[in-house]
Image 1: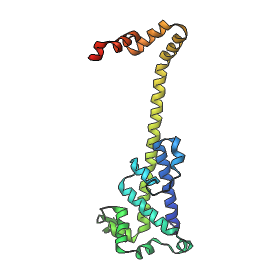
Image 2 (image 1 turned 90 degrees about the vertical axis):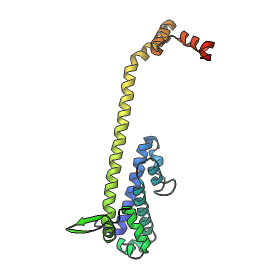
Image 3 (image 1 turned 45 degrees about the vertical axis):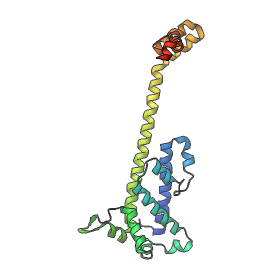
Image 4 (image 1 turned 90 degrees about the horizontal axis):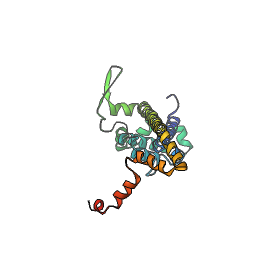
Length: 217
């Protein structure tokens, strides 16, 4: 928070770009994680679009990230911006409609919500315009914490799935071992095991499928 606004915007945008790529990669699977990290932040095929389609972020968070990308693009336009850019200066030089869009990106339809601070009450819109860096930072911390928790949840779900698969394989291993042994040694023993697994004999299955009455029924 103590660094200049230009560095703040550039670094925060890079942090979200990395976080979104990682969480989307976790959701789709580790096999495609490296591929998901490659697209840009925005656009119809960007990380934000992937995250929204997967339900990782909501529409309000998409608006926030679009605003952050807009600010980042403003900062990236030449060395002069690196020297002169500030969030209060940016807001002072845009149109009233753009200031309204700025507030909407941060608070949605709750721009008139009361905000109490140091014994004084103001609106969410006024607080955002008077303290843009603080407002952007507070929302960023909330979103990054949510993304981290989502990533942890994905890890837990995958771990549970692996445990269930391994437990199922352990339970079935004796039966599978017996079936493989029977196939190598005795066809009749293999048929008996197959009957136990299927709940009926292979010949009964063949008869059921071939029976005209069964077909008509």
